[in-house]
Image (tube, rainbow, N blue to C red; front, side, top):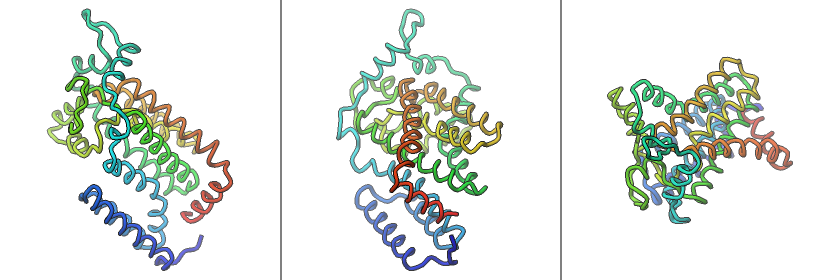
Length: 310
Protein backbone atom coordinates (compact mmCIF):
# COMPACT_ATOMS: atom_id res chain seq x y z
CA UNK A 1 0.00 0.00 0.00
CA UNK A 2 1.45 3.33 -1.09
CA UNK A 3 1.69 5.94 1.65
CA UNK A 4 3.04 9.49 1.87
CA UNK A 5 5.92 10.61 4.05
CA UNK A 6 3.57 12.39 6.44
CA UNK A 7 0.24 11.06 7.71
CA UNK A 8 -2.88 12.50 6.15
CA UNK A 9 -5.23 14.66 8.17
CA UNK A 10 -7.65 11.72 8.20
CA UNK A 11 -4.94 9.58 9.84
CA UNK A 12 -3.38 12.19 12.13
CA UNK A 13 -6.51 13.69 13.72
CA UNK A 14 -7.88 10.41 15.18
CA UNK A 15 -4.42 9.53 16.56
CA UNK A 16 -4.06 12.92 18.27
CA UNK A 17 -7.62 12.87 19.64
CA UNK A 18 -7.49 9.25 20.87
CA UNK A 19 -4.09 9.56 22.55
CA UNK A 20 -5.07 12.88 24.17
CA UNK A 21 -8.32 11.32 25.41
CA UNK A 22 -6.36 8.31 26.70
CA UNK A 23 -3.96 10.53 28.68
CA UNK A 24 -6.77 12.65 30.16
CA UNK A 25 -8.86 9.63 31.12
CA UNK A 26 -5.82 7.89 32.61
CA UNK A 27 -4.96 10.99 34.64
CA UNK A 28 -8.48 11.15 36.03
CA UNK A 29 -9.04 7.43 36.67
CA UNK A 30 -5.72 5.99 37.78
CA UNK A 31 -3.14 8.78 37.69
CA UNK A 32 -0.40 9.35 35.16
CA UNK A 33 2.95 7.64 35.61
CA UNK A 34 6.19 7.99 33.59
CA UNK A 35 5.40 4.86 31.55
CA UNK A 36 2.21 6.47 30.22
CA UNK A 37 4.21 9.39 28.81
CA UNK A 38 6.84 6.98 27.47
CA UNK A 39 4.29 4.78 25.70
CA UNK A 40 2.44 7.73 24.20
CA UNK A 41 5.71 9.40 23.16
CA UNK A 42 7.02 6.25 21.47
CA UNK A 43 3.78 5.79 19.55
CA UNK A 44 3.70 9.44 18.42
CA UNK A 45 7.34 9.41 17.33
CA UNK A 46 6.84 6.22 15.33
CA UNK A 47 3.57 7.42 13.80
CA UNK A 48 4.73 10.88 12.75
CA UNK A 49 8.41 10.23 11.88
CA UNK A 50 7.76 8.74 8.45
CA UNK A 51 5.87 6.16 6.45
CA UNK A 52 8.09 3.23 7.49
CA UNK A 53 7.82 3.93 11.21
CA UNK A 54 4.13 4.78 10.83
CA UNK A 55 3.46 1.26 9.56
CA UNK A 56 5.39 -0.09 12.53
CA UNK A 57 3.36 2.03 14.97
CA UNK A 58 0.12 0.67 13.52
CA UNK A 59 1.51 -2.87 13.53
CA UNK A 60 2.38 -2.56 17.22
CA UNK A 61 -1.14 -1.53 18.22
CA UNK A 62 -2.07 -4.99 19.60
CA UNK A 63 0.85 -4.72 22.04
CA UNK A 64 -0.08 -1.16 23.04
CA UNK A 65 -3.67 -2.27 23.65
CA UNK A 66 -2.38 -5.17 25.75
CA UNK A 67 -0.38 -2.82 27.98
CA UNK A 68 -3.26 -0.38 28.35
CA UNK A 69 -5.74 -3.15 29.12
CA UNK A 70 -3.54 -4.57 31.87
CA UNK A 71 -2.96 -1.16 33.42
CA UNK A 72 -6.65 -0.25 33.29
CA UNK A 73 -7.62 -3.16 35.50
CA UNK A 74 -6.66 -0.75 38.28
CA UNK A 75 -9.87 1.19 37.58
CA UNK A 76 -12.18 -1.60 38.68
CA UNK A 77 -10.24 -4.38 40.48
CA UNK A 78 -11.39 -7.96 39.98
CA UNK A 79 -11.96 -8.50 43.69
CA UNK A 80 -14.85 -6.01 43.46
CA UNK A 81 -16.55 -8.35 41.00
CA UNK A 82 -16.14 -11.76 42.62
CA UNK A 83 -14.77 -13.12 45.93
CA UNK A 84 -11.04 -13.78 46.17
CA UNK A 85 -10.03 -17.43 46.24
CA UNK A 86 -7.11 -18.00 48.60
CA UNK A 87 -7.75 -21.22 50.46
CA UNK A 88 -9.71 -23.12 47.81
CA UNK A 89 -6.94 -22.91 45.22
CA UNK A 90 -4.28 -23.81 47.77
CA UNK A 91 -6.27 -26.85 48.94
CA UNK A 92 -6.91 -27.94 45.35
CA UNK A 93 -3.17 -27.74 44.62
CA UNK A 94 -2.39 -29.76 47.73
CA UNK A 95 -5.01 -32.35 46.83
CA UNK A 96 -3.81 -32.75 43.24
CA UNK A 97 -0.06 -32.23 43.50
CA UNK A 98 0.85 -32.30 47.18
CA UNK A 99 3.42 -34.80 48.44
CA UNK A 100 4.65 -35.83 51.84
CA UNK A 101 7.99 -34.62 53.19
CA UNK A 102 8.87 -35.79 56.71
CA UNK A 103 5.22 -36.44 57.42
CA UNK A 104 4.02 -33.03 56.19
CA UNK A 105 2.12 -32.61 52.93
CA UNK A 106 3.65 -29.80 50.88
CA UNK A 107 2.61 -28.23 47.62
CA UNK A 108 5.43 -27.86 45.04
CA UNK A 109 5.81 -24.13 45.78
CA UNK A 110 6.33 -24.84 49.50
CA UNK A 111 8.91 -27.51 48.69
CA UNK A 112 10.89 -25.14 46.49
CA UNK A 113 10.67 -22.38 49.12
CA UNK A 114 12.57 -24.74 51.43
CA UNK A 115 14.83 -26.29 48.79
CA UNK A 116 16.53 -23.84 46.44
CA UNK A 117 20.02 -23.12 45.21
CA UNK A 118 21.86 -20.21 43.53
CA UNK A 119 22.14 -21.96 40.15
CA UNK A 120 18.40 -22.60 40.04
CA UNK A 121 17.72 -19.03 41.21
CA UNK A 122 19.88 -17.68 38.39
CA UNK A 123 18.13 -19.73 35.71
CA UNK A 124 14.74 -18.87 37.19
CA UNK A 125 15.47 -15.15 36.89
CA UNK A 126 16.72 -15.49 33.33
CA UNK A 127 13.70 -17.51 32.25
CA UNK A 128 11.22 -15.11 33.84
CA UNK A 129 12.88 -12.09 32.25
CA UNK A 130 12.06 -13.70 28.88
CA UNK A 131 8.33 -13.60 29.69
CA UNK A 132 7.31 -10.56 27.58
CA UNK A 133 10.56 -9.47 25.83
CA UNK A 134 11.05 -12.71 23.87
CA UNK A 135 7.51 -12.82 22.40
CA UNK A 136 7.70 -9.13 21.49
CA UNK A 137 11.18 -9.58 19.98
CA UNK A 138 9.86 -12.54 18.01
CA UNK A 139 6.98 -10.44 16.74
CA UNK A 140 9.35 -7.66 15.64
CA UNK A 141 11.56 -10.24 13.94
CA UNK A 142 8.56 -11.56 11.98
CA UNK A 143 7.62 -8.01 11.03
CA UNK A 144 11.10 -6.90 9.98
CA UNK A 145 11.79 -9.97 7.88
CA UNK A 146 8.62 -9.30 5.94
CA UNK A 147 6.26 -11.99 7.25
CA UNK A 148 3.66 -9.33 7.98
CA UNK A 149 0.57 -11.57 7.89
CA UNK A 150 2.14 -14.14 10.22
CA UNK A 151 3.25 -11.26 12.45
CA UNK A 152 -0.26 -9.84 12.56
CA UNK A 153 -1.78 -13.22 13.38
CA UNK A 154 0.73 -13.64 16.19
CA UNK A 155 0.19 -10.12 17.56
CA UNK A 156 -3.60 -10.43 17.48
CA UNK A 157 -3.53 -13.85 19.16
CA UNK A 158 -1.17 -12.45 21.80
CA UNK A 159 -3.73 -9.73 22.52
CA UNK A 160 -6.65 -12.17 22.45
CA UNK A 161 -4.94 -14.56 24.88
CA UNK A 162 -4.36 -11.65 27.25
CA UNK A 163 -7.99 -10.57 27.06
CA UNK A 164 -9.12 -14.13 27.78
CA UNK A 165 -6.71 -14.24 30.71
CA UNK A 166 -7.91 -10.88 32.04
CA UNK A 167 -11.49 -12.15 31.86
CA UNK A 168 -10.33 -15.12 33.92
CA UNK A 169 -8.97 -12.74 36.55
CA UNK A 170 -12.44 -11.24 36.95
CA UNK A 171 -14.31 -14.54 36.80
CA UNK A 172 -12.13 -16.10 39.48
CA UNK A 173 -9.94 -13.66 41.46
CA UNK A 174 -7.23 -15.76 43.11
CA UNK A 175 -4.20 -15.24 45.31
CA UNK A 176 -0.80 -16.60 44.25
CA UNK A 177 1.03 -19.23 46.34
CA UNK A 178 3.34 -16.69 47.97
CA UNK A 179 0.29 -14.92 49.39
CA UNK A 180 -1.06 -18.06 51.10
CA UNK A 181 2.44 -18.93 52.32
CA UNK A 182 3.08 -15.44 53.76
CA UNK A 183 -0.34 -14.14 54.81
CA UNK A 184 -2.57 -17.16 55.29
CA UNK A 185 -6.05 -17.46 53.82
CA UNK A 186 -7.69 -14.12 54.62
CA UNK A 187 -7.67 -11.61 51.72
CA UNK A 188 -5.93 -8.31 52.49
CA UNK A 189 -6.89 -5.96 49.65
CA UNK A 190 -3.99 -3.52 49.94
CA UNK A 191 -1.31 -6.23 49.83
CA UNK A 192 1.63 -4.96 47.76
CA UNK A 193 3.23 -6.97 44.97
CA UNK A 194 5.83 -9.48 46.07
CA UNK A 195 8.90 -10.82 44.26
CA UNK A 196 8.66 -14.09 46.23
CA UNK A 197 11.44 -16.48 45.17
CA UNK A 198 12.61 -14.15 42.41
CA UNK A 199 14.05 -11.90 45.11
CA UNK A 200 16.94 -14.35 45.34
CA UNK A 201 17.87 -13.50 41.74
CA UNK A 202 17.99 -9.81 42.64
CA UNK A 203 20.21 -10.64 45.63
CA UNK A 204 22.56 -12.70 43.47
CA UNK A 205 23.03 -9.85 41.00
CA UNK A 206 22.86 -7.05 43.58
CA UNK A 207 20.06 -5.34 41.66
CA UNK A 208 16.33 -4.72 41.94
CA UNK A 209 15.05 -5.99 38.58
CA UNK A 210 12.13 -7.99 39.90
CA UNK A 211 11.47 -5.63 42.79
CA UNK A 212 10.86 -2.85 40.28
CA UNK A 213 8.64 -5.07 38.11
CA UNK A 214 6.44 -6.40 40.89
CA UNK A 215 6.28 -3.03 42.58
CA UNK A 216 4.11 -1.98 39.60
CA UNK A 217 1.81 -4.98 39.83
CA UNK A 218 -1.74 -3.85 39.04
CA UNK A 219 -3.38 -6.56 41.16
CA UNK A 220 -1.86 -9.34 43.26
CA UNK A 221 -5.12 -11.32 43.17
CA UNK A 222 -4.76 -12.24 39.51
CA UNK A 223 -2.98 -15.59 39.60
CA UNK A 224 -5.48 -17.58 37.51
CA UNK A 225 -4.71 -18.22 34.73
CA UNK A 226 -0.95 -17.80 34.58
CA UNK A 227 -0.28 -15.62 31.55
CA UNK A 228 3.41 -16.14 32.23
CA UNK A 229 2.76 -19.73 31.16
CA UNK A 230 0.76 -18.66 28.09
CA UNK A 231 2.98 -16.25 26.18
CA UNK A 232 5.71 -18.61 25.03
CA UNK A 233 3.07 -21.13 23.96
CA UNK A 234 1.81 -18.51 21.51
CA UNK A 235 5.35 -17.61 20.39
CA UNK A 236 6.26 -21.26 19.87
CA UNK A 237 3.05 -21.97 17.95
CA UNK A 238 3.71 -19.16 15.48
CA UNK A 239 7.38 -20.03 15.18
CA UNK A 240 6.18 -23.45 13.99
CA UNK A 241 3.55 -21.88 11.71
CA UNK A 242 6.23 -19.58 10.26
CA UNK A 243 8.49 -22.62 9.74
CA UNK A 244 11.25 -20.90 11.69
CA UNK A 245 14.65 -22.53 12.03
CA UNK A 246 14.81 -25.62 14.21
CA UNK A 247 17.23 -23.99 16.65
CA UNK A 248 14.75 -21.16 17.27
CA UNK A 249 11.90 -23.60 17.86
CA UNK A 250 14.13 -25.58 20.24
CA UNK A 251 15.14 -22.38 22.07
CA UNK A 252 11.51 -21.28 22.43
CA UNK A 253 10.62 -24.74 23.77
CA UNK A 254 13.33 -24.50 26.43
CA UNK A 255 12.29 -20.97 27.45
CA UNK A 256 8.63 -22.01 27.56
CA UNK A 257 9.25 -24.98 29.86
CA UNK A 258 11.72 -22.88 31.88
CA UNK A 259 9.05 -20.24 32.51
CA UNK A 260 6.55 -22.92 33.55
CA UNK A 261 9.06 -24.30 36.02
CA UNK A 262 10.03 -20.85 37.31
CA UNK A 263 6.39 -19.89 37.92
CA UNK A 264 6.15 -22.74 40.44
CA UNK A 265 9.75 -22.64 41.70
CA UNK A 266 9.47 -18.94 42.55
CA UNK A 267 6.12 -19.30 44.33
CA UNK A 268 4.30 -17.05 41.87
CA UNK A 269 1.93 -19.65 40.50
CA UNK A 270 0.43 -23.02 41.36
CA UNK A 271 0.71 -25.86 38.88
CA UNK A 272 -3.04 -25.38 38.39
CA UNK A 273 -2.43 -21.78 37.29
CA UNK A 274 0.24 -22.89 34.83
CA UNK A 275 -2.00 -25.52 33.26
CA UNK A 276 -4.85 -23.03 32.96
CA UNK A 277 -2.45 -20.53 31.38
CA UNK A 278 -1.41 -23.10 28.78
CA UNK A 279 -5.08 -23.85 28.13
CA UNK A 280 -5.75 -20.12 27.77
CA UNK A 281 -3.06 -19.86 25.08
CA UNK A 282 -4.36 -22.87 23.17
CA UNK A 283 -7.93 -21.54 23.39
CA UNK A 284 -6.85 -18.15 22.06
CA UNK A 285 -5.01 -19.70 19.10
CA UNK A 286 -7.99 -21.95 18.29
CA UNK A 287 -10.59 -19.17 18.57
CA UNK A 288 -8.55 -16.87 16.34
CA UNK A 289 -7.48 -19.34 13.67
CA UNK A 290 -10.63 -21.48 13.51
CA UNK A 291 -13.18 -18.83 14.44
CA UNK A 292 -12.28 -15.20 13.83
CA UNK A 293 -10.23 -15.78 10.68
CA UNK A 294 -13.16 -17.66 9.13
CA UNK A 295 -15.62 -14.88 9.98
CA UNK A 296 -16.10 -12.71 6.91
CA UNK A 297 -16.17 -9.31 8.63
CA UNK A 298 -13.07 -10.02 10.67
CA UNK A 299 -11.30 -11.56 7.67
CA UNK A 300 -11.86 -8.37 5.66
CA UNK A 301 -10.61 -6.25 8.59
CA UNK A 302 -7.52 -8.46 8.86
CA UNK A 303 -6.77 -8.12 5.15
CA UNK A 304 -7.05 -4.30 5.28
CA UNK A 305 -4.88 -4.19 8.40
CA UNK A 306 -2.21 -6.43 6.85
CA UNK A 307 -2.19 -4.42 3.60
CA UNK A 308 -1.65 -1.19 5.54
CA UNK A 309 1.45 -2.49 7.31
CA UNK A 310 2.96 -4.09 4.17
